[in-house]
Image (tube, rainbow, N blue to C red; front, side):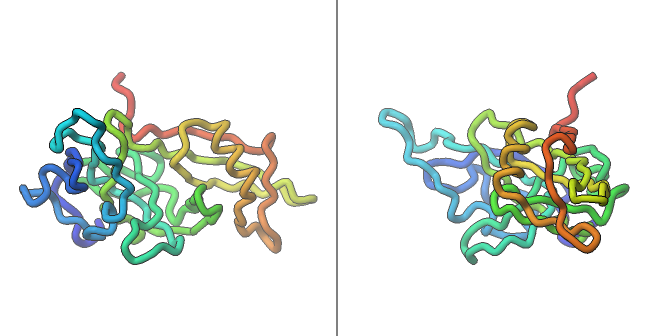
Length: 203
């Protein structure tokens, strides 16, 4: 379990001033301090709304922090981990990595892939629109289309609403992923995606 991990996770609202509404009221420790929300592009309340009306929701989420470069006052790129998946259990006070580590994580925004270990897991503030769920984790299983290769890869990503959108982003950005003595050659018919919702559906 990463040092500085909280005993609980929490959720709340962000007010028009840009601060979580329960900031300083017993919120769990935040590993990356203010970087996860400072610089967020908050919009002003619409005419007729009150200054206390929430314009965003937020929650502390165990996430894999990626190595994409970012300004000091901006949030790092990160991928929220679902509460249960092949990577382990990340719910409440439980941060229990298991299974497929080290794992490759793909930033769709920058088209960069990183091999990450459990020590890349930190607690991040995930800010999103009211009613919007935490992004699902997607496991991409793909076969390298390079001639005489065919090596299988498992890669994790998040941040898009569905599989067709993820495929389009990958084919447009052509992320660089090492594969033997060459780079992974992406091909749509050799890719398959499995979605892991942040909160598993109730059975």
